[in-house]
Length: 319
Ligand code: SF4
Image (cartoon, rainbow, N blue to C red; front, side, top):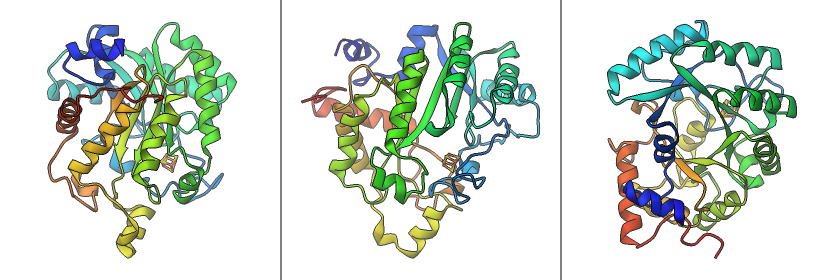
């Protein structure tokens, strides 16, 4: 409650990651996406070739495509910074965001080479690494812990759902226990750890979706990122949706605002919320049910909804 009250000063009824960054670093933490050319065991045949049914990495790449795997990471950062500085004029500290595919899926020597190339850039003060929970081990974590003595280091795990049945449906290739272990191991070592969840995956009822706030709250997480289910072009999910739209329950904007507000009420008050909704470039969206609404607007609407409910993050945590 204490942290959320502090956030009320910043006009947020939830524990905002952005506000934490401002307090911790004195400014925004701006991610500069880099594509280090890693692949993913759920795509290269190690686990499967099809990948997660919702996955289209192209749709998550930066709009101007400044991160191309064939280019050196330092050049990708230069191009990214040029684009970002033009777009966002407010001062920020910059971190390299290893975003596409599974960015700990290589041997340690390769990971060191890629991460350290990014950290050599004079304007980069840290790295954020997106990966799968089955692509991490003790040696990699200890190396990251050492790096974190000098730089900001955050691991982002794609958890996506707390239910094994859902994980099977989306062809995730690991179970929830795997996510739990990876998060606990990372926290034990002392790395900032974030979990991604998709709200509204096929087969999950509203109550199941909300109950994940209780489950995730018991994990030693620093932050979470939430996104609504989106049907993205060129995915197995889109193929299935086009054939069987009745199987899917996509939330209207107002429904999602209500759902995510209820989720936040049940979330541990100490966990920072880094993202409330997801965006992909409109050309990739099969269903454009939210019109032109951007993530910033969703943040404001959720805050307004929590105020209407006289509620805040953690109000119903553990009740
Ligand atoms: S979402 Fe991540 S884990 Fe799943 S197939 Fe895509 S890159 Fe691999």
